[in-house]
Length: 130
Image: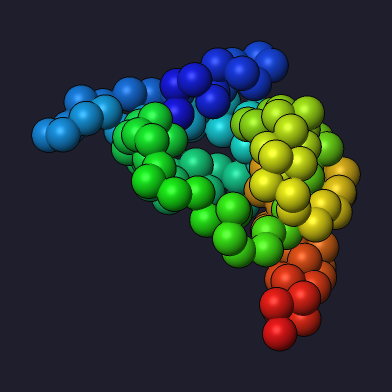
């Protein structure tokens, strides 16, 4: 999580908590909207910040045994106004996965701010894997 967060510009303001078996991080609630949900109304973004669940850093730092994208078709929705994962980094990861790529002018909270775009990608993936 830390390496991925550090690649964003500016780096994601994370709050770290040591737990048995590692470190969990969440986005600093004071910076949540600007980092994660810039195109979501203030009240909804505040609710999202309060309800966010921490992520264990091992989720993105431990090596995978076998990456699923090597054998399973992938779809990706690039969020061009994202301050959590830079759009260029999203695009690079998506191209590496040979994903079907769509783009939208959205923050990282695309499922809240642009649910129709997310629905379309899910439907495209469902039709593309039949």
